[in-house]
Length: 168
Image (cartoon, rainbow, N blue to C red):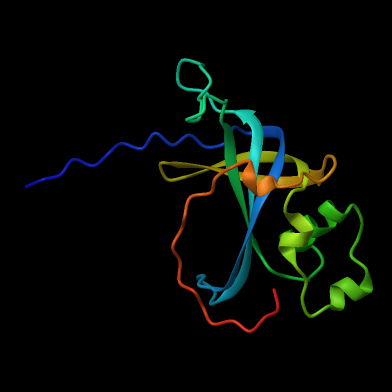
């Protein structure tokens, strides 16, 4: 017996300049990558850009509110100058990292990123038949948003819990 597979209706985040709030910061220690285990930080951003259906009508949530796009910025933890992770930290702080911050053994990415109102630039990239939306750069736009994690209900995700002894 064959089972029909659902067709994907996923629409990537539109390209161009947008604004939003980092509503969640997910830390994955020893995440498996093609280059071996790496510490990863995922910035989950609730965009102010409202989703629309194929007819140009706003897509609404269960309460009838317009629903904005959500985009994830996957970062590999690195302290090296020029790394995307360090660039993101310096953009949010609005300054270069101090020598002490660069040399530190750890820091709290949730405390540093979550709730920050940002602007960001999205570029599209095609790979095979798929279209990907990636954040090219971001910058601080305004004051931190309190209780930002309450603006979007993240889906429960299951992933392996690696043994870690790092303090963040």
